[in-house]
Amino acid sequence: MRNPARGHDLIALRRLNTTVVLRALHRRSPQTLAGLAAGTGLSRPTVEAAVEELTGRGLVGESGTGTGGRPPGRPARHFRFRTEAGYVLGVDIGLHKMVLLLADLGGTVVAARRDDVSPELTGGDRLALLRHGIETFLAAHATRRDAVLARCVGVPGMVDAGGAITSVVVPEWSGVGLARLLDDGGPGRTLIENDVNLAVLAERWQGAATLVGDVVCVLTGHRVSCGLTIDGRLHRGRRGGAGELGMLPLLGMSTAQQALAWPGARGTGESEVAALARAADAGEPRALAAVADFAARLAPGVAALALAVDPELIVLTGGATPVGRHLVPVLAERLRPLTLHVPRIALSTLGERGVALGAVRKALDEVEEELLADTAS
Image (tube, rainbow, N blue to C red; front, side, top):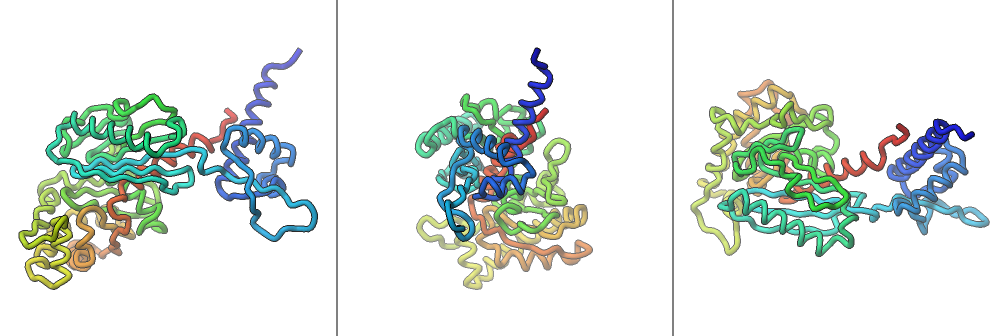
């Protein structure tokens, strides 16, 4: 009689071996069967069986080119992780804009869209706009809806471990399970995360903080909020509110954006901050004074985080980055008397995509955890 326990063990072992091979190809592609066997410590027949299964699932394919010179005789077959096997969606729904990015499983953005959003929209109207935007974007760019394996939406507000939001920007969303309302029945999970937390993930992935562990990210613009990583890991806090110093009126960050008001001339289609930056570049005293005022309002909150976390790097991102080259030195000077030392300050180069890129990264992490986790148990 067949031992059912042993049969279960064999199935679990095959799943584990398949995951080991997929993880190796995800880490480095393309590879030969012999290279996979040597790198994983599995036998050649075991690797062949795993590759065959993964090919059937669409996750692995044969590559037409190798990584080295071709030896005499029949060339070795090379296999790769198929980044085109699925997609993730990253969304930033802010007070004034919505950015949507569709990326493959290698993190390459294959489609993007930006829409202006009225700051006067109610929470219900904003939700309807978000749902419609996601629906039309995926309909236009995703070949199959079931190929979208995860979605992540960045929102202005604290998000706890269960996905519940506390927002002063969109107060109607507070306490709402937004992920459930956005679920379209597709195969992937919908994740909700605080926008500045996603911004700092993006900076560590593709931005100014790629080689830095302890980072404070300051999201500037119509509101100011902060996020941080410690030892390379996002620090959210118990309820998702770590770094939200903009909530404390005494620090002045909640009114910092008022300093960026610019009464001067603006070109056609030019934003207020862009006009301010142009005037500052020209040495306009009023513009330079506005930047200095903004730095003065940011400094107490940034200094408090610098003293609490002692970061290696502070990254400035968000709507105020056009004035960044003037802001960085002034902010450093303002921090000097408030801190034990002034951390290095860098300006984000990710532009308006920063939060949405962080959402892509978080969605990719979700997919990779599911695909590459040990499945023997």
